[in-house]
Structure formats: structure tokens, C-alpha cells
Length: 307
Image (cartoon, rainbow, N blue to C red; front, side, top):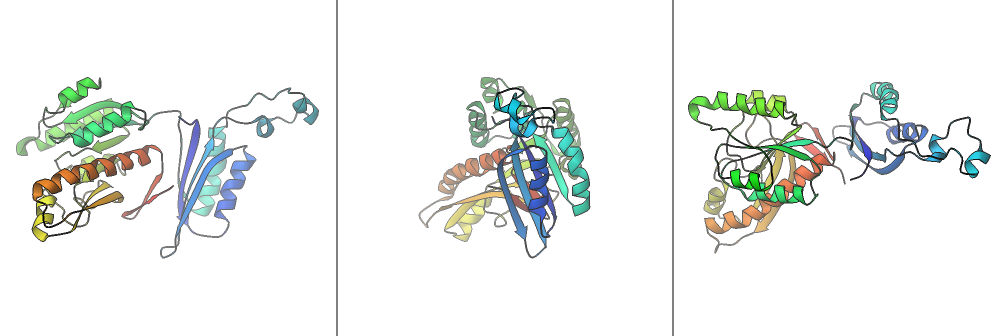
């Protein structure tokens, strides 16, 4: 895992933004590992992601008392860590001047992710495998389901499981229990790995741009509970899957990733479901990984996913 910091920025576009940010990082001794930016010309907006190492260098971190001769002889060359809080304080007035929304994070703390599912386990199994093999850098303190099908899988990976039944007459109580679990486990991100329940606006509001869902269609086509049936009835030649952030509107949040598969008139609904499961696994794991890598910025109902 890289020992690094990431700065995400969005603001009104103007000349010199990249230079202002990179100059401040240079002045503070940063070793930039990756930088990417994007402009939305129609809206006049600028987006940027910068990642830099938190381990400093002798050249950039040497104090005024260290002479060039001393450095040449190897004296006082022990690398120092980048002063992240110092940079935060220095960057804040620049961000205010330029009207920036910004988020500064480091790799020092792994995000804590809660996984929700119902009875379909293919996305859950895929995420857990990727987590165990180190592809998803996070902690998973809890798995939640309104069924018990996933309980043995959770036990296999050594993750606490919580069964929270959801019925029409106790939906509010169930979501109150969900929030209680998330808060007690310090959860940063909620992943709905085919969790077939609608979340309340109050629940969604507690985790803005921090609930990722996978929908088994190429949104905005075929929303709702049975998109493969609808796609088969319509006779489409492509089916897809979509990962997106959850908002109050069903299946309408900012799209993170999509993928498609070609089908034909020979395919039945069961064939569409089987092919779709592969797509669902792919788009959900990509979305989760990009979120954990701090590569996504939301604006309006869109996302920027940095390289």
C-alpha cells in the first residue's frame, strides 16, 4: 500500500489553477506521484486529483542549519514525513480565494466498509475475494442482510454478520438498526451488493456519495426490480450493469461505472441473468476500488473518475 496523500478539488475554471496547487506542494516539499485534471467547458468547472508521497526527501526537508557541504557528506539526510496538517493549513486560504471545494485524505487509515446484500451472493463473494487478496484496501467490520443466505460466507471470511429482517411494518425500525450498526462500527462506505431493499431519504442523507449500489441494467434503461425481464421483452441486443452512488431517487444517482454484453434473439431471460451477473461483479468491484483509491468526484448528477 502506498504511503501517500490525495487532494481532490473542484471549483470554477480559470487560468493558473494547476500551477497554484503544484507550486504550493513543491514549496512544502511534496514528491508528486500522480496528477490528473478535467475541465467541464459547458459548466465552466475544473476538477483535479493530486497524489503525493508522505515520506519526504533530504533535499526538500533539509533545514536552514544544514549546509550543502553537510548534506554532501550524508549528514542530516534522514527523510522526514510530509507535514500534512501544515499543508492543510497553508492550502485552506488558497482554496477559499479560488472558490474550491476540496478534500484531503491520507492512506494512513484504511476506510471501513459495510457490505449489504439479500439473497444473491455473487457480488458479495467477489468483493470478499478481492478484499482477501488485497485488491480492495479497506476494513470490512460488518456484513448485513435481510436474509441468512450470506451468513456462512461471512463466517468463512471471519467477518461479523448481522441479520436485520425487513418487512413492510418494520422498515423504519430496520433502518434505525442499520444506522446503529454503521455508527458503532465507524463505517465510512456502504456497499449494496445486490441488496434488494429501498433505503429511506434519512438513511441516504447520513452517507452522501458514500453508498454504492449495483443495478442489473444499463441505466437509465430498465430501472426497477426486473430489468432482465424487461430487456428480454423489449428484444434488446445489449444488456448491461451499472454501479452508482445512491440518492433519494431510485436508480438515479451519479453513475460510476457501466459495462455491457451482447445478446441475441436466442437468449432467454435465464441467459441474460447469467451473463448479467458477470457484469454486475465487474462494475461493482471497479466502483468500490476507485472510491477506496479516492479517484471519484461527484458534481450534479455526474462523476469524474480520474485515471
